[in-house]
Image 1 (tube, rainbow, N blue to C red):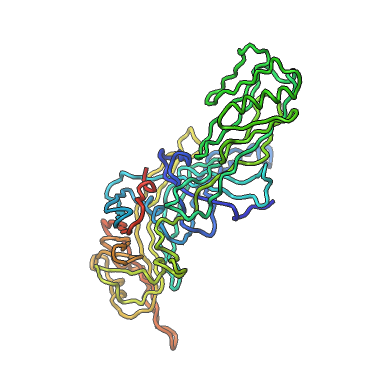
Image 2: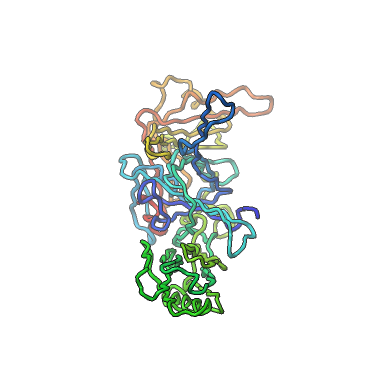
Amino acid sequence: MTYGGKGSSSYMGIEGTALAGDPKSDQNIPFNPMRSFIPAEPKYSEEIEHVFNSLVPYCIYSGELVPIDVSYETLYKDPFLMLTFFTEKTLAGTWSSGVGTINASFTAETELDTMFFQMHQQQQNASVAAPKHIDRLYKGVLPMQYSWIFEKRKLMKEAFTIKALDFEDVVNPMNCSNDFHDDAFTIAAIAEISTIVAKAKASIGDGDYFFIYGPSGTFSETKYYVWFDQQGAGQADPGPAGATEILCDISGATDDDSVAVIIAAAIAGKADFGASSTDEVVTVTAANGGHATDIVDVDSTLTLTVTTQGNELLGGWADWDDTGIIDSGGVTGKRSSADAVLHWNDAVLTGLNIENMRMDMDFGYETSQVVSSLGHTVYWRTVREFKITITGKVNDKTLIEEAEKKYKDKTKQTIKLYYDKTTSEFKFMQCTNAYISSESDIPEIPESGKPSEATVIIKGGVAFATTFVGNFDTLPDPDVLMSN
């Protein structure tokens, strides 16, 4: 079987406890639509040791779980991933029935977000009973670099780079309010069905047991242990921690069929299951649909099989601010490059007929490990950088002259990049003390019949401050999608 995008899904969240993201308890947040999802997996190093009497390795070992930078690009719709780069976020205004406002800045460092990313990659045409999908939870995801991209005649995009400090193989179906996504991943609840092949009493030890899991229908489950009292004395209860007892007293059973009847009755006595037996085979159906950890043996030696995999998913691509990519008429909405406006000191920037723009923010982290850990558990903020790169046809020499000045002589102004200037819905990124960098191009004399083009770079100067301001009209309160 191959793996592909059909049936696959991914989402993110802000960790309630740094480096320990739990999609079952931390809010699930949809990603903006993306072409592909790149695994953010850190890699184990391979250290090779040689000895002088051999030309081949003497030993190889992993000395470090090394986080790597991974980059993504999406169609920009909602701002929630972008907001994780900022260290202070506030909400104001009137949500749902009026105009709500999001303000984000670095004024305080009260909200240093770390994230988790969850990925489900679907095995195509997989067995219903035994799929081998790839499910990964990436934890301790640190925001490194963020960009807005505006290209002529194209939709606005965001690009971002992250690094994840840890990962594990675990299934966590997305569970997110319909207010925030487009239902692209949603799967109606499917109940898990398992079979148990019983044995005669003599083949089962006193206190032997297996685990079975009952989904709640609300993206959680209860863990049960089914144990066998062979002697009828009730003294061999294994009592594993964190599991609820289901007792099967088989002391009076005469054959495997009668053991099956006892198992079915005991399991059906719990509201999370329905169960019946036919000869020596017990069929257990979860009372609620949804993903459940598979039935698993400990020491009973019974044959346990999942015949129908439970599943449920509520989620999709980001769709909170649905004034975005496509409007109700099926045409381009407010995320086109045509809606982007660059203001220099509260007036539209002049000097260049802008064709493409890119805003880059580098507000990343460095990481390290301690001697007792393979993984990186120590992280700290690095220096911040802000840059806007614009390209286009030169129509005035003002920007070029600014680029040629010494820094002390350059004009320092506030730069604002708007992606929506609609009344009551304006949204922009702002950087104070910005200047035209000397890294900008000096335009060449072009070929005959062609206009002069240039690339102008605007940077945040001494003591610059970056803020995001967004007004959103009659949208649901987004508080749950922001810092925990």
